[in-house]
Amino acid sequence: MIKKVDHIGIAVRSIDEALPFYTEMLKLEFLGLEKVDSQGVKVAFIKAGETKLELLEPTSEESPIAKFIEKRGEGLHHVALGVDSIQERINDMKEQGIRMLQDEPKVGAGGAHVAFMHPKSTGGILYEFCEKKGLK
Ligand code: ZN
Image (cartoon, rainbow, N blue to C red; front, side, top):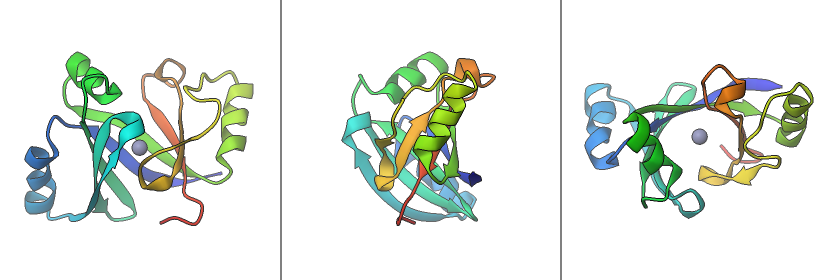
């Protein structure tokens, strides 16, 4: 079932500007940078113990992250729950009446399979299911 909070997604205008807070002030380890073209974002991963922080910077104005920042400003974007068998989790949530933004997982940062729940179904929080088969 759900194994842990895999990561927390944080929307930022600029990774370059946001990163020193995490690496220099909080002294967390920077794990790497990745561009995810399908979602119009650049992602920086930061290790915070068992969980990662994922800084999300929009790479185009059509990016969902650009729209999020425009509407709500920078800040907490989503909470990702690490799961096995993501398709089963999606089906299970739908059977319980939860709206999913994807009926099937898509490939996200780090090659993980991901699917999001609609915040209207979850008390206002954008939750992600995230499965990392054979990935770290
Ligand atoms: Zn995520």
